[in-house]
Length: 79
Image 1 (cartoon, rainbow, N blue to C red):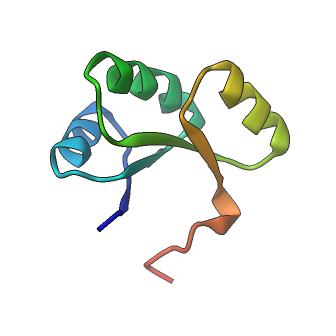
Image 2: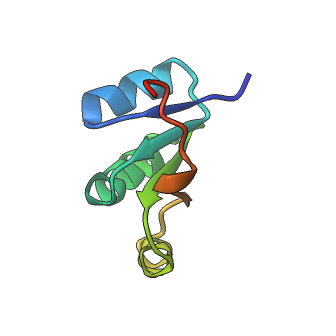
Image 3: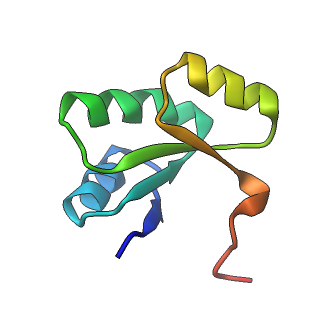
């Protein structure tokens, strides 16, 4: 089963990876650090930066982030 987890810090990122999450959804700010960890430790999980614009998508491609997801496409489970 593929699933995504929203993570806010390194601890949550490592826990998500250990629990076999397919995708980590995270802020633009944390994306570069998280991608480096994922690359260095050969995570099976993909890093997805939450974005609001196509300009941010281009920026994330330059930062070599695995992928992006538009914030508006995320369904909030609390709604």
